[in-house]
Length: 222
Length: 122
Image (cartoon, rainbow over all chains, first blue to last red; front, side, top):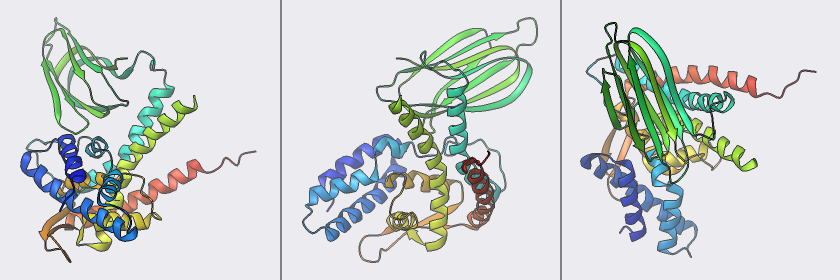
């Protein structure tokens, strides 16, 4: 029988994972079995350990629910388009990306830290560039850390009105890999989105024959 | 200042851990397949001298992503003594991906070790 400690903990994990109901049921059942076995083994190793203490030790080793949810590789799990590719090639790329992501994120952190981006004003990501008839995808990520987080993601578009200005689609994915906000802009304007979650966020920008200035920024508020 | 450095390096290590966890899971699944989650964690822990650099629960979202990517597959089957467990094994594509990852890892490991070696310049 699962202890209340484990069941309460799994409720938190389910919330943090934010999976569809059927997927969440299977995932939680698998985790429950893991926690029950871990608690049982701890009691075998330490016969004086009570049920509650064993369950607490197992959940502690299992980790913070938010940290578990954020363990997913940014961008890999989110839904893809209809394009088809060789399956083993996809797998290879996924694993190579897994190995690389640490290095990339670390490099990003280092470059941000050493490159003079204002730490005090809380800017964690900036894309500021002028484009001419740009048709491409650009994928970036930024990392935010800390508790009681409040941040702002802003997009400013200044198309060149004298030419075919085109459009820009901006998608922001939360640390769980889910689409958090999508902005489809063709006209000049400024948009802002608040975010409240620490972890690695992904930004996908799709330029559709766009000509003009783009300024995208993520800013952690104090 | 020291706290700021430690917090910063914690973030670096967390970022690296995500990628390394994928590789460790692949290696453990390859060695012990079919294997369920708890046994997988034990295998990984044993290979790291009893200490894993990540919380145990992080393996499950990663297993799910690896399965979605076609690297591994799973099935529920009766446990050795107890309820049914979910067992994992590499797919054919996963075997190929593992071979590529070995080659890639070898190059990255050599490069990192070279860069992290103590500076021996005069």
